[in-house]
Amino acid sequence: MADSIPSKDAIADLIAAEMHREGPLLPILHSLQHAFGHVPEAAIPLIAEALNIGRAEVHGVMSFYHDFRSVPAGRHVVKICRAEACQAVGGASFADDVLAKLGTAWHGTSANGAVTVEPVYCLGLCANGPAAMIDGRPVAGLSADDLVAEVSA
Image (tube, rainbow, N blue to C red; front, side, top):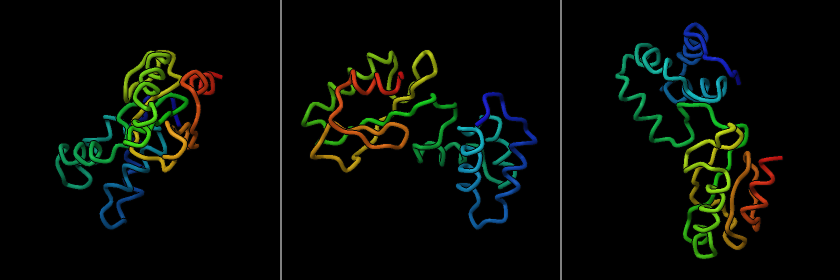
């Protein structure tokens, strides 16, 4: 993932590489996100033009699939379960504590760029909630302090 703004040529090359696919919009979005860590705003009109669709349609698909990002995520991505079973065992206060300790809100990134926090609905760890996922690794039974310490190390 690059830290700089991707060039239009780099974006266009990734779009072109997926144009052979049936229904190429999702593969294009995945390719851009994989390459840059997000789908750059500059890519939206290029995608729309290549596929002969409106920009609103590209935005609509991106907003429907919550894993697509329009801005880069932090170095760590924490997903906290918001499902009923986790809520029943303190998930709401756990989430509030994590967000407060990191100084961010849902879908936000901490001021130092270290951690992005997102909601997720059921990680399948219902018996051990509240549950979370740190960089794709499921965790349960952690306190908010433990979780924050792990992503701050």
